[in-house]
Image 1 (spheres, rainbow over the protein chains, first blue to last red):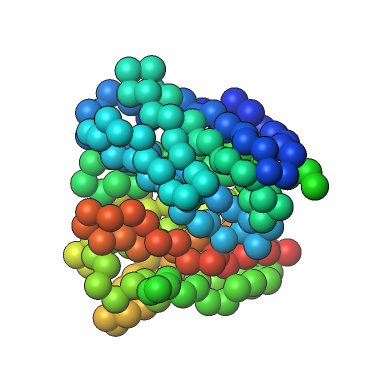
Image 2 (image 1 turned 90 degrees about the horizontal axis):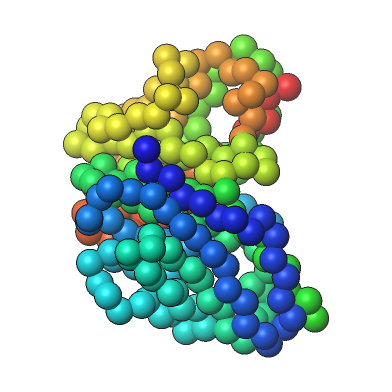
Length: 114
Length: 112
């Protein structure tokens, strides 16, 4: 079974500081995609960043970057220069195969302290 | 930016009633999905739909659930006889063949 594990249910960071959210996954597939989604209190699912497993280079989107360690099956999210608007639940997710249904982790609730 | 539209945003229904949740996926997307998130829990896959038929479904998606694409634009999820445990946020999503998902803003279903 494919699983995604987020071991930090809650994290906090001071505004303007950097925080890293952890994610590990378990798969026997070689071709897959990894994602981080942000869910603010409105509960909308917002894509933050994606990583293709075949790419060795870590994905970056402005203040958001990932550390993708394929052999270790680890996919952490780094948020630099944290802003109050970054406060949300963050979900790590993964998909593979033709139907490509997403498997989500249990989420990390990020609090940004002013 | 194209959006996935879900209606209603909040639906309250009595236990045992049928509900239909509606979604309008992005027009050139080929794959459609329903996900569910019970309050405080992770997001769970329900069903995927491609080429006018179900391509995958989870254990959650039992005989009480059905999906339909009745015309060229809408994609619906029907729950035949709602139970209290069906209370959740339901997300519709669509996808092009090689790109990531676009999620709708969700329908909060409350069964009383």
